[in-house]
Length: 129
Image (cartoon, rainbow, N blue to C red):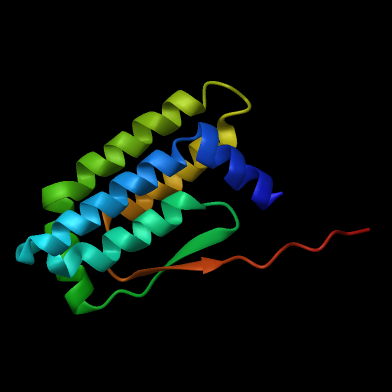
């Protein structure tokens, strides 16, 4: 099921375009020496944006990641999260779009403070029968 959701996400949910945008942003951050500390976080968001279903976000806050997240939130995090929130609202209008709206809400959470987060695979659920 996660394969099918990820495939539809890539085609219709904007996942491919958004992941490309995050990868280009990470490249621009790496080119400008100032943005280099946030490049790994942008690449993690790009990776999660590409295939969000079947994976979850875990945070391990440290004082350094807290400082990085505060700077990130002030400069970029709030408007990136707002964009994902608006996309989630637009997708939630239809019943078919609700899973993709949920993915955009998870992305909005991650874009608020991506420094110090990791993306882990969720184990497949076993059926009761």
